[in-house]
Image 1 (cartoon, rainbow, N blue to C red):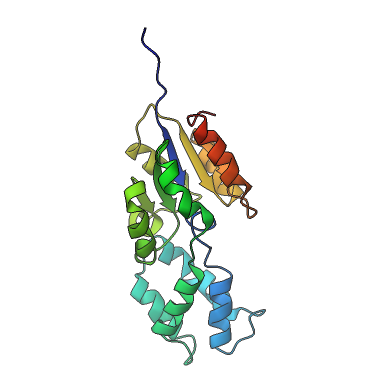
Image 2 (tube, helix red, strand yellow; image 1 turned 135 degrees about the vertical axis):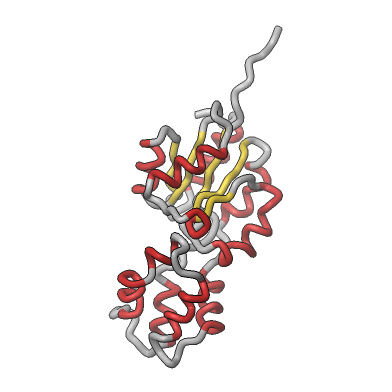
Length: 205
């Protein structure tokens, strides 16, 4: 007798708020303090959102150009100082320690709005447990645009279910609209227990 087998689950994870801490708002608070600007005014962050953010995250400006722009905002800022702020903020979350166990039950992939070079140290540590990585600065697309979800889907086995984890409900809505399952990475971390339970049962919904 032949036992039917289910296609292996494709687990697609965001980085910020899922595997590692989000850069905002702490990074920009540190930048404002170093520039001598009250963090509640956040003038540099407002300029960043207006002039730089969109272009940076889809790779239209380089990381070096971002640091040059940031240094130009205040004589108190320089690349080394701001990089130290960045890596102080980009800290692993508990899910990072679960990837090895999860990879026994699912194929794990990364889909993130981020800058590739900033993620490399983290990605190097978890490389044995992950498959495809789609980073917005690499592919000139970012969430919540449906195009980046479709791009990731082309890399995955067509018959396999896809479960996407993100900390932003709007991104989960887009994932569901393209036929993926979704799970919210809540700040309390309850999603980790739900994921453990799901993968322990074979990854099926």
